[in-house]
Image (cartoon, rainbow, N blue to C red; front, side):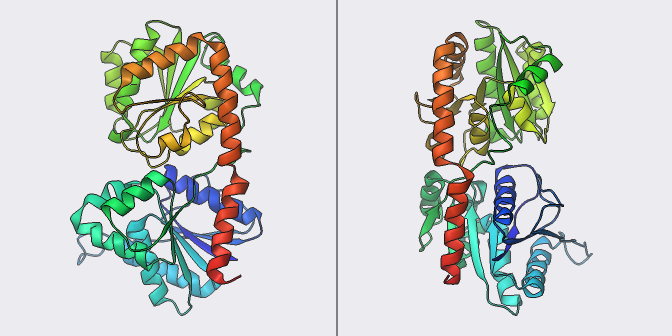
Length: 376
């Protein structure tokens, strides 16, 4: 099959999932065309069966804002015709699903449209009355719409009320990139940061937006680190980076917190850690959870969105209420002191990720969906 994929190229769950999907499909012999404003994060330009098509958005005086949507739709239509694509897979309802629908009308070739909903395109934009009808249109005019979690699927019906079926296909991981077996990396990374093996390392990775509640992680860490020897690693960058550094100083824990910025090889930081924290107030799925769990970390997550669909409370990790950083700190201390419990949960999490979220299983679901659309 010849498949076009459009996503946001920046770091973030939706772009990473779209990129990994394309890479896995290319390994199976499909021809993949990424159509985006930049080369997507994590994409190797030299990958076999993969083509990238960048759009150049030009500013004109007559337009108040650069015409990204129209330029993207036109580019998609050109790629559809030139490369005779079979399917275009749009990640995000707006603007990408709308762009795909317009591209189909512009192109000279009939094509199937798949739209995957990732989260904020529904939970945030779906509450904007100026966009709600457009989101509904994008979902209903796609040939198939998928959601990355049952929670997001429920939110979509509640907020948008589309009159079509939505299929849940979970996110997945590339097992080769995130593997807990490489013990040498753990030792090397801890030596780099002068961290003793007996010290518990807690990690969080995100785009440092308000909804990630990094402030709750810092407050939980302050309480826990007063009782056990512990270091916090915060990986990523975003609008709250400076504010969180200031908060760490205010809480008098700055010397125990490592702000390491965006890390293209985040798996190395997972491997040196023991506990992963994700205390978001909104989270459609939590791809970073899968990556961390497959590196042998025990997760502590909030009960927001799709997080409880990934973490099985007291079986593969722990779930707390949103904003309940005190309970999160209790679990941090418990895991730090009880090595047997941490080891038990770690291996249970590894098994669960391998069974429910492995790339082969999830890519099979996408592949079957594409083939059914094309009548194969």
